[in-house]
Image (cartoon, rainbow, N blue to C red; front, side, top):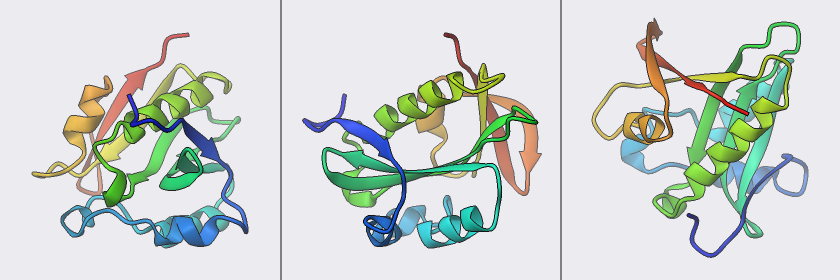
Length: 151
């Protein structure tokens, strides 16, 4: 459970975009997720994407980007990060539960996919702890995993 603050997902807008850009993972995690400024640029240039800031109370602590296409309902966690100063406080797991809740509301939202870099210090234990299982597929050196979402 998160440390004392309620975790919410909020739209990225003029009021918080710089704070989201300024969030980062630790130096030893930078090979595992793109910087938020790159993710926001990709979201701007892409259709059918759902982007949210992760907040703990009133403080931005992370970022999430999900492919969200009604025409092809295969929901894919494209980016997910919690700032290095806020990791290991339960915010990531709480934010992922909210992402799962959102996907359940979408057409065909009975599962969610993601991919991760299989390396020491990577996010694999975190995702597996949330119930993700490998699909056996690989994308550009990353392993794909899926989680079934029950209502």
